[in-house]
Image (tube, rainbow, N blue to C red; front, side):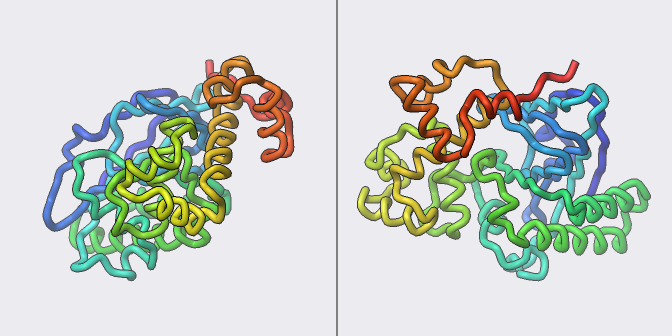
Amino acid sequence: MQSSLTITGPCCLITTRSKYARKSDRSFHLELLECLDDAVVSSPKERFFVSKYGLILATGFKKVSLQPQKADGRFRLIQLDVAYPAPLNQYLMADNALIHDLMNDQEDKSYYIVFHQLSDLVCHNYLNLLDLLSQAGRGDAYDDFQSQRLFGLLCTELLHHYQVKINAAASTFPVKQIRHAGPDTQAGAILTYLTGKNGQASLREAAAYFGYQPNYFSRLCRKLFGHDFVHLRILIRMNIAENELRLTNKRLEEISSELGYQDVANFSKAFSQLKGITPGAFRKKYGIKKAR
C-alpha cells in the first residue's frame, strides 16, 4: 500500500493515526517527508532546520510541526508499506545496518532519520517516480513491485556517503538497546541521548544508561566518533548552540547557561574554535525569520 500527499504552508503532521500506519508481520511501515523548500521542523521535544530537498525517513510522525520559510512553502509526504524480505536483504535495503536496525526495532515508538545535502536531486527524482505511481491510482501487483524496487534504489542512494548525508544530531534512534546494534545505530543513539541532555551527561551517567562500564563506553565513543567523550560533548553542545542561534532569539547568555557554560566568553571561545565564526556573526549570517 502506498499514498502520496503534497502539503502547502505550515501544518501539524500526525500520521500515526492514519489507516496506512498499520502493523503487519509481512511488511513494515515507512514514511518519507521531503521538504520542497527550506523549513523548520518541530516535535514536542526538539526543533531543527531542514534545507530544500532535505528528507526525513520515519516510522511515523506524532504532532510534528512543519513551518516553511515562505508562506507557500511545500512538503511531500509518501507513505509506503515495504515487504519484509526474510531476512532483510542487501538488494532492498543496501548494505547498511542503520536502516536495518531502525526497521527491526520492536518498540512501539516513532523514530526518524534526517538526511540533508541532497541538492543533486537524485533522491528527489526517485520520489517523483514514487509519487507518479501513487497518483496513477492503479494499486496493482505491478505498481507494488515497482514501488518496492524504487524504494530500494532510494535507500541505496541515501546510503551513498551516508556519513555526510545523515544529520545525526537531528535524528532520533532507538536509544537504549544498542549492544547488538550496528555501529551507525550505536552512534546515532548516543548522539540522541547526549543531545537530550544538552551535552551535559557525565561519562559514568551515559555509560550506565546504555549498560556499559565507563572505561568500555569511553573506548566505544572513541571508536565510533574518533574523539574522546569530553570532545564529543563539546561537539554536541556546539551543534545545539548552532541550532539555537539559527532558530531562536535567545540571548547568548541564555544559550551558554543552558549548555553548562559559566560565562559567555568561554562559550563564544569554544564556538569560534569549532565553527570558525563567532556566535553573533553566525546568527547574523544564518539566523532565519519565521514565515508570515
